[in-house]
Length: 164
Image (cartoon, rainbow, N blue to C red; front, side, top):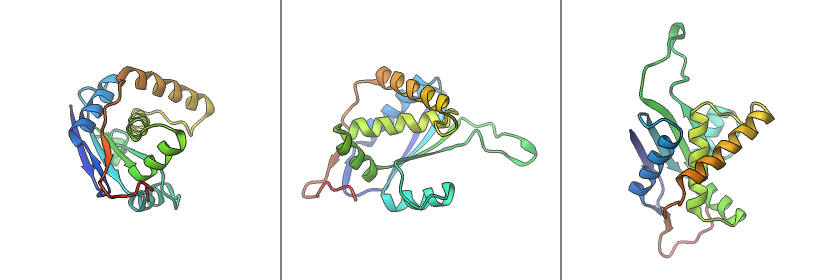
């Protein structure tokens, strides 16, 4: 199992090894211990561009998931790859959501990681209310399985925490 992590931020310090290990725990918990995952933490501007390009929604969002195994190739052939897909998380949006919900940024980041990985595994809460309930139950079960959540994100000294 491999997690390819890219952090495109300067205002927050991310313990990348800790986050990669957490992502590996999530993959194991969903039965994808042999799979690979690409995980990227971005700012709101990049997330807005991705959301606009791929979902036609011109605003930032918290998490996007791009499954690799669902990619349709010419003649309907699916690629044989260990890569489950890409999860992209807007860390500034996660900071705002954590503050609003009264939880830590580490908890929020973990929730978004689990949510994104479940999308890669075929869960889709936008499809139907029953599917949303099913995904929500699975999220709660996974969060329980992988707890406690490690400390992964801190703010750089001298920086405000407004989460632009």
